[in-house]
Length: 52
Image (cartoon, rainbow, N blue to C red; front, side, top):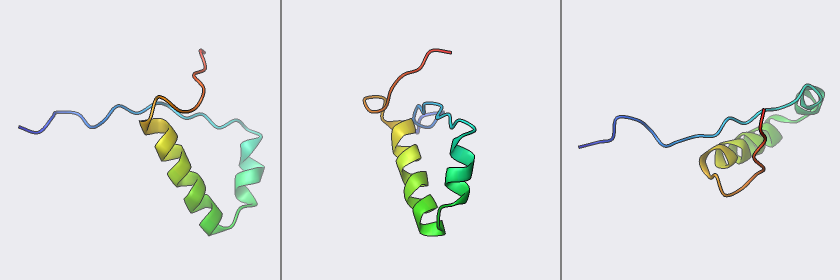
């Protein structure tokens, strides 16, 4: 039987300072960034945990 829920994902937070940087990226660069963010959200062993 298939699980009820998909895999656990972390919340990835981008700060306001990231917006102009992302806006300046080419589409191909955004695709790479998107893949990296997905990887970070799925693998809890990478990245830095931030308490808020």
